[in-house]
Length: 97
Image (cartoon, rainbow, N blue to C red; front, side, top):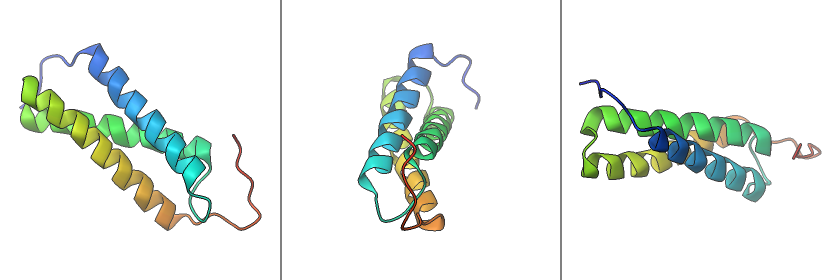
């Protein structure tokens, strides 16, 4: 089932979720992971992809949009968690932001 139109505000909110999640991950995790810049980029990708997937699965009604926001947060967190496990930060590596 393909949604006919997804509101522009949904895309903005999903992107904001990805930016916030990526920034928080980049600043909080000092022992491993990518730089803050890459965490933000992958956070946006995960949040937008997760939100879009949940709209496809649950539709664009009121409950579907709420579930898409929760899905966006969940997928963003999972993507960032996996990337920080896969790519450990070196001990002398400085953050770029």
